[in-house]
Amino acid sequence: MGPEENHDFTFYLKPLAYMTPSIKKVIFNSPATIVFWADGTKTVVKVQGGDRWDPEKGLAMAMCKKFFGLKKFYKAFDPAFDKYIEKESPLEKFNKAIKEIGR
Image 1: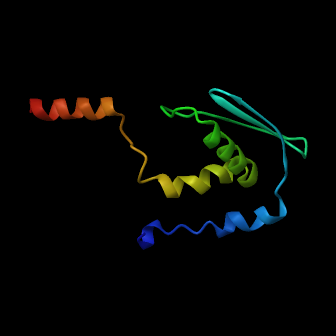
Image 2: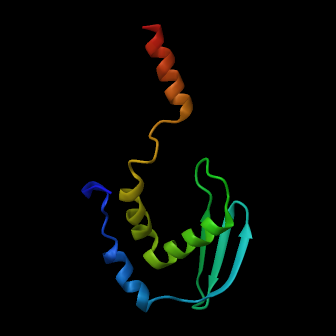
C-alpha cells in the first residue's frame, strides 16, 4: 500500500469504543437492511447502483452508518474507494470507443 492509499480512520474509530449500542432486531428485506438499536433508533441502508443485495454487507453498512453518522459515513468511505469506482458506465465506455473508431 503506497502513501496515497494510507487513509487514517483513527479520527472516526476512537469514539466507537464509547458509543457501541447493541442491536435489538434486524430485518433483511431485499433491497434494504433495517437495524433497530437498543437505544430506540433505527438505521436503514439500501442497495446502491448496480450492486447485488447482500445481507452481511447490509448489516455491516448499517453499523457503519450508525457509528459514523450519515455525513461522516460518506466522507469516511469516499477517499478510500474513489480510485476504484468507475466514473463511466460500461455503456458510456462502449459509446466512446465506437466514436473513437469512427474518427
